[in-house]
Structure formats: C-alpha cells, structure tokens
Image (cartoon, rainbow, N blue to C red; front, side):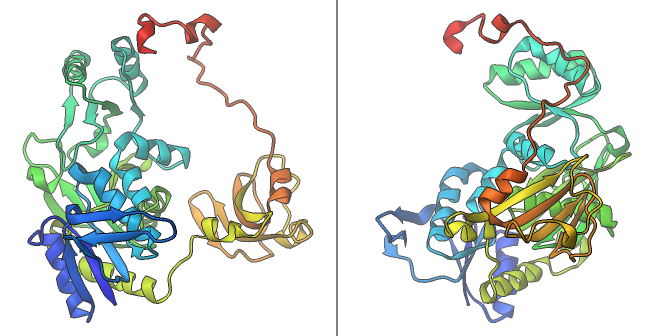
Length: 404
C-alpha cells in the first residue's frame, strides 16, 4: 500500500508518529506539503501535480490540514477523492468541523448534547442572547479559534458585553455559550478511529486558567469512558462526516456535551498520557479500508433510476408503531431496512422480528416513490413560550436598508 500524509511540517510529532507507524507496518509512506500541490481539472481526468511533477498513484491519504490553509487544503483532499483515493477524512467533513458554528448547527440538528449556544451580530441582541443561555458567567468563542485561542470566560454580563463589543469591532465572529459550571477547568478528549474510541483522556486546567487544553498548560490523565460517552463521541464524528477525530466533551449533569470535533487532532498529548499507539490504530484502520473499502451507499446506490437511500421517521401515532418489521408492508413497497436508529442506539441490519417504537428512524434502500409516500406531513414546530410573533413589517424593515 502507498500512503500520503498531507502535512506542512515533517517534524511535527503527529506527522512523525504516523510515518513511523506506517513504516512499522510495511506501508510505503511519504509526507507531502499540502501547499505544494497543483490541481488540474479536465473532463473525466482529475489530476494532481506535486512540485511541478505529475503525482504518482496513491492508495490512501491522511489529511493533516491546519486551520490557516483550510480552503486550499480541502480543495486538495477533494481532488484526491475525485481520483478515487481513500481519504481518512473527507474535504466535506474537514470543512464541517473547522467552523464552530456550522459544526454545532449540525450536531444540534441530530440531537447531540451540546452546550447552549447563540450567535448574534446586532448589539441589541447581545443581552437577550446571554439571558437565553442562562446568564453570566458565559463562554465567548471565536468561531475559528484553535487550541484554546479565542476562548474567553466572562464572569459578568458587563464583562461579556465589553468583550463582545471589542471582538465585533475587529470584525470577529463570536459565539456566546453557556458556562457548564460542574465541568469548570476540565474536559474529555476522546480519540475516534472508525467506529471505535481508541483512547481517551481527561484534561484539567491549572491555577486560575479555565481552559484545559494541553497547549495552555493543562494536565492530562487517562480515562476509561462509559458507553454513553463513547457513543456520543462516535456519533458526533460520524455525523460530522469524519472517520478520524478528536472529540472534546464536557462532563455535565445531564451527560456528555460536545464542544468540538477536531478533524486533525494532535497525537502527542493523548499518546503520552495513555501510552497507547494511537498512530498505529489510525494506520491499521486505513489499511483495512484500502483492502475492503466502505461504500457511501447514499451516493452509490442512487444510480438505479427511481431507487435510492433515505431515512424514514416513525412519529407518534404512526401505523407502524407496535409492529414487527416482518409485519409491515415494506417488502410490498420494495423497501429494505439497512439500519435502525433508536435514540443513541444504532442497529445495523435489524432483525425482522424487531418491533418499531415511536421516534425510530429507518435508513432504507428502495423505491424513492414509496418512501416519499411514507413521509409524514410536516407540522409547525412548537416555539419557545417566550417567543412572540413579530408584525409582518418587522421582518422586512431595517435600520440600515443598505445592509440587507
């Protein structure tokens, strides 16, 4: 197998360890500077050049894309994907995870536990936003900060207002986030590879520092995660569209709350802390994928006209509730159930004796027309009791019409 590691620093600990682990397993591996690629596009023949020479064939790629080169880095990864090279993380997944707001929007949509968060632009919206997340103290985050940079704790509303006003004056996009008091100064980093958590550590801040990042002086200790925390980390990784990720979680009174899903997690802190060969787990996973690749059925099976893959939701009151899969009319509708999602459980290839319950979701392959007819009519979501409808004119008026 021939493997490329996309990295701008051949001497970085993570790059070095991945290369060592690959060599130990007999893998032909090279470290390639992401910014030294040229992307060539022509009909039916996507290609890459590296240092002015046409790139030779590779079986797999490990992207180590830094935040400062996200746009170009994801373009290179996307080109590898178009050339049918296995990428440990896809360009789509990297882009999703790199934007804190975007990633939280995706996680919230899929009912993953996250700290209450709000994103505002207008100065008048700041105080109401702080109140909605529970009042001071609050966490203020730059949307594109890394390694704890751009993460601030505001102990009072007045402090929060001042910080937000200063950052917004510098054209910075910020998030206002609920401060989870019971997790002050500590968090968990779970390292996910494929469908497993291969290592986990708890990071604890030192002194008056509330950020627990190792880069900020935090100390790390190995931790054995419960199934609840493992499931949350794996689901967050998969929902984000990644296969290798460092998932940062808070230990709240209500269970795990995802802070961030990192698509290029560092190896030094977690390998030093746990004494586990995390780099080796990554290489083993990639080798297995190259030998027997997983296929994204959502993309591959839609080639048959009228057939595809979709999710069927089983709402309260559905005719299917209480029935076994074998008792449904799915086979008559030419539908096959691939996976059943129930709460935090993922049940692949469910047994036909499985009884359906309210709020189950079924990933099915079959006739799109049949699935379309099974989708319940959308109902208007119940709004928060504090929210009041605005007059029709409010949505169209602006103090500065030229900014609309």
